[in-house]
Length: 211
Image 1 (cartoon, helix red, strand yellow):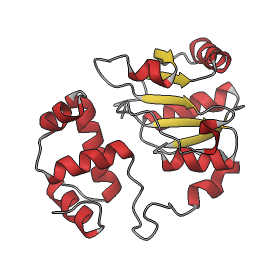
Image 2 (tube, rainbow, N blue to C red; image 1 turned 180 degrees about the vertical axis):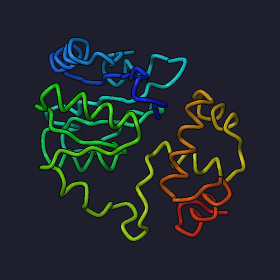
Image 3 (cartoon, rainbow, N blue to C red; image 1 turned 30 degrees about the horizontal axis):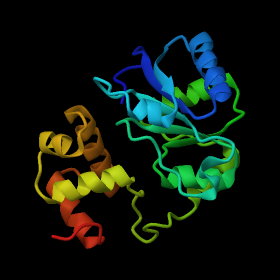
Image 4 (cartoon, helix red, strand yellow; image 1 turned 120 degrees about the horizontal axis):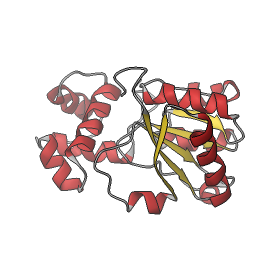
């Protein structure tokens, strides 16, 4: 999360469509004075490029026909994700995958930049037309009252249950310690607890881990 409004916002842009990626990149560079595009590419290209530190926010264009109706996997870069989706079903998939914000793919530059700034600062942003997606029950654990954990956060939670430190978690998952800390904090926030031990206990009660 950013420390102040004056801090430049470091963005990683992910889009499989090169035309969409080019248009988004131009919009960010030309109109986002406080936006710094660290990296732009396909999901495979970005994930194969090791960064010294995670970005502040990931802009993820899921495409016109994301996953051909299959399960969406959000980028795991240690930063909140703003997803651009073509329709409501795709929005549901992106939200379940861990996206923090949802906008339609044809969003204008001004609201897109505003949403990026908000998500980078820990807020959730949704297009008004996608409000029903935001309030819909999560399929994975609808009765828990907690936000759904992403696949990476579930891995981190399992390692927390083993009593591993952030450094040990980073080594086990081949990620940076900074990224591991980000995921640990996200797990604590989603489970509504302050400490790691509390997270493990609550997760056990919810059936997410076995002690």
